[in-house]
Length: 212
Image 1 (cartoon, rainbow, N blue to C red):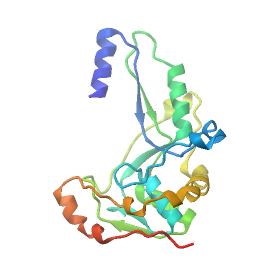
Image 2 (cartoon, one colour; image 1 turned 180 degrees about the vertical axis):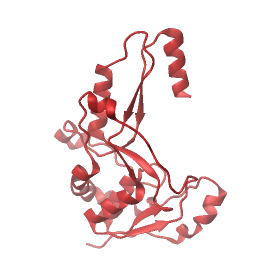
Image 3 (cartoon, rainbow, N blue to C red; image 1 turned 180 degrees about the horizontal axis):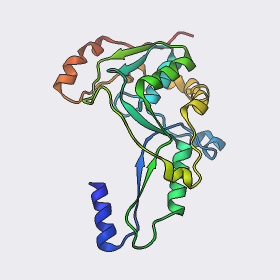
Image 4 (cartoon, rainbow, N blue to C red; image 1 turned 90 degrees about the vertical axis):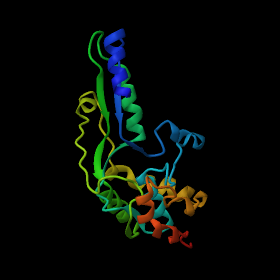
């Protein structure tokens, strides 16, 4: 619906429009927010609003197995919060010319399957990986063919999970893991009755903090 409205106002009213297709944002700091702890970005890890990466990082910090839903074959697009800010700057600095069609940018750094992200976090934290029933109604495996070439041609040099994930684990999650409520990590809502029935066993699963 958003895309259709952008096209309408672009064609009907002559508005210059840039449409950013946003990937999952990870990371809690930019060079600017590092200057004061009060500027640290929020970190959601719960089963409804937290991203899969945040959930894995929190579980890894607590020393409990990572929870991969289904086969883990779902492909997701990721981008660091610093790159998100850079992409906004690039888009604003390079608007479409008057009369041009809607400009579309893919605001992503890379794509990875969930099970591959879990393996990456497991290597960093030393925890195991558990495959659980999926509370979401989605394909067990999917491809995500997306290109960030436009942004890269305009100067973006993407931060990847390989290059900065360890910093995220050690400087943020470990520091603030005492604030974690472990009972909020597993899903509490399901996309339909069938998903709820298949995930009934999750109600008996508990996550306990690793003793120091």
